[in-house]
Image 1 (tube, rainbow, N blue to C red):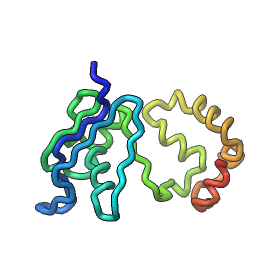
Image 2: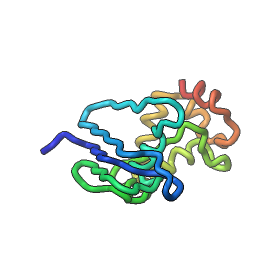
Image 3: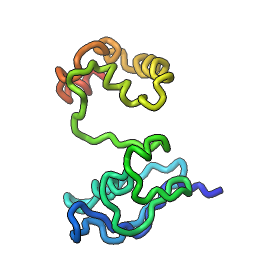
Length: 148
């Protein structure tokens, strides 16, 4: 069995027809590796990730996850495979509580949420204190301070 978890080969992708942002990108990620994708603004880092995550049209190339071809699959089809995306912006449901927002991450396995929330809350007590607070009331720095 190969320890290759993610293999992207010769990816060509973009958002607008006939305008390619990626022109033949490759990436291999093996089990246990931490990988960073770095480059200047506009180099295609986010587009590459969105192509892998099914959020951007892949025009050619191939993406495999644990040996299975996932090229062109939609993001919601990748969730059961353990693939998710957390953007760097504050994307919360402002009318839901902090706890309800976190619970959204377990919608495929709701039975595990209580145990997982208790575990996270034990590491970040202030998160537990604010669990019933509406998420839209917090700024990003305040959320980070609360978790620290």
